Image (tube, rainbow, N blue to C red; front, side, top):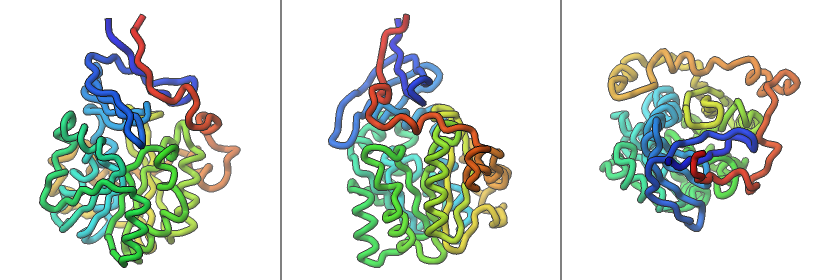
Length: 311
């Protein structure tokens, strides 16, 4: 008899894992961390009852968050990752030989610890000589970096959804501080949630970034274990429209053999948006696919993942 783990996509719809072995389940000052093995998905990391990483599909998320901006920037030498304690985004960043240093800042050191232990392929770059891994509040880190007049070529926000501890990573103040660190030529990419289930969140992120940056380009990727299986990202910059940059074919070809998802054709195609998303971000909500989940606030009884014996 197997156990089942239920990750709520909405109060009515769940992703259900068939659990073969539970490794860890504990509370940190920031969130609940659970690690288990599941049929079809391999090892799974859940944060706050929500799927964060699975062995089966993590590359779909990490590659799309990372490579669009990395290839759009002509020479990304200094990169900041906010969140991403599992190490997957850092791994993708450090595939690029142009990178001289990459800073990863995650508020929860236990995420880094369990990733090293249970997801060695994802966490492999955490000990890379170009990497600096910092356990700190990402918002506070960025504020100090602005005060110290630091500069980055890219900032990638690999956070949980905009609820609970991650709320401040989706605010105007945080995005403006990122703009100060990036200057005219840098690029910011925050993960931007599910357009299928949380379209209002996606639209709010795009609208806010559009008010701060000259260019804000929404693009899509595929992550099978996330709500709707399609995930949104928004690349923002004062000078770079990632959707208009010619694909650097030679740079892409150089690392493509290491990638499971991203390639030159994907870079060109991922900016193509379905009509319901185009219309929503253009301010035509009557034409959009209705948002389902935003009507239910965080902390309601259906949000945390639960394990139950299968019938």
